[in-house]
Image (cartoon, rainbow, N blue to C red; front, side, top):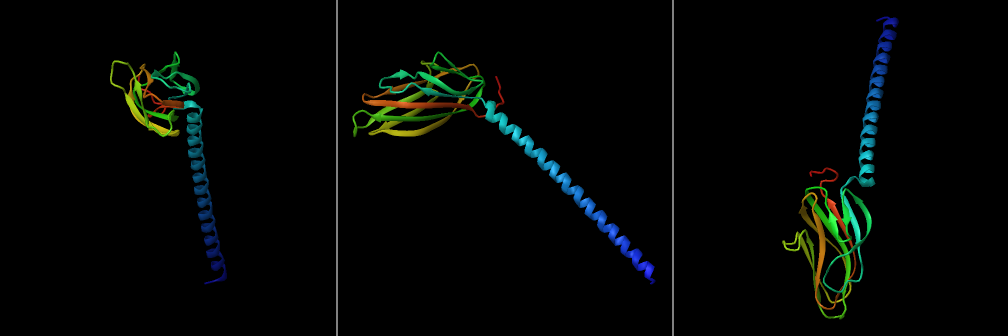
Length: 186
């Protein structure tokens, strides 16, 4: 072999290495572009959901209830495609499963003595309740409660409280969320 052939052979290796490095850089750039695209797409979905994209309503009940009643809902914290009618009924816009989440504080006015109450989600008073919660206490209790319930579009639902003498509902936040996110079937 002559000295010229060795140099020629080395140039081929250098060119091959340069091509391999160039291809590797193109693949890294392509991966970066795909990663950024996926990241921006996910961020757009998250921001649209945070801006109210999921069908829901979150309201506060009038505090300090000591007698049987339909809960008066006073303040809407947040809502999207659901509304509060006459301060007592929640209007649903979609048919499907909903998560009913309640955060409530209640107490026995006769401390140490057990007092009970039943909270019902109803569409009509003459029908079976759509969902029920039983509350029992001898002292002040604050807790979260939840149920999954099936509601129909354009249905008006309300919360009814049936309590024993000496039971006091101190406060309650009601959150009703459609479990299919923003996808609505009327």
